[in-house]
Image (tube, rainbow, N blue to C red):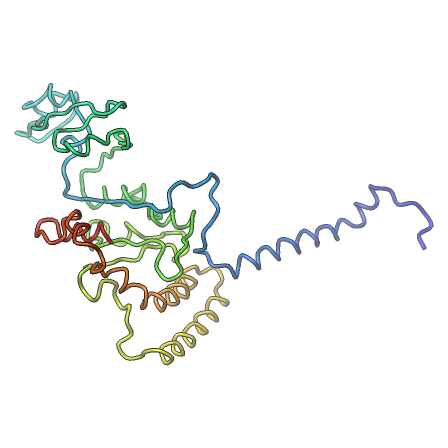
Length: 304
């Protein structure tokens, strides 16, 4: 029986270790819950989300910004002159001349957005567009510039924009990748344009090649095993992968392999349906330019 009163100070002093263990227990429980949760599960953003998905069209070889949405009055002023005349101290190759856009610009909508005459129909929706003319680069080479566009830096390996979106928001789909890239170029930065860099490997993009071929996603089919045999083989591989991951907890690549194997198994049934555009109406196919030699390939990528 306690013979003296215990002050608040003494209580905190003597039971401090106990409080520490309580905090440790709570953190351990939280860590255990996180350990066994799917890293791709949807996450609650800081603000209420209005968009359900992000579609980024990287149209290399497309029309120039100065011919579409980026009106340059100074370019008209120095048309036919050397770059050195326009920018003091700029060393340019001899014979190089500045050229203004051959297309006329005009303001459209209540916002007064400058759009060239190349887009007479799109200009009617000017107030639904948000055009960012403030981004720029001083890199003249396409490979490095593309890497900087997708990752924010061409000198250091950093996660791509798609990897960051998937990391921050997760995905509702359990049978398809949360981040895909359609027909990415093997050169011009390659896989770095859709890689996860220092983020866990599970957040990197899945490349879809020729959308019309039977091998749109490489190695999606097991040519030798089907059904139960394939599931048993995968279970054996996953048990070995899990053992290796337990022995090397800091290696996120192993977790990425485990997740990608399971996702690949589920994708076998889901991918053919997604890539099949036969169920689309003739009107939809026509609107996307499918069937026309000049627009078929790009239209299929957009519709998918």
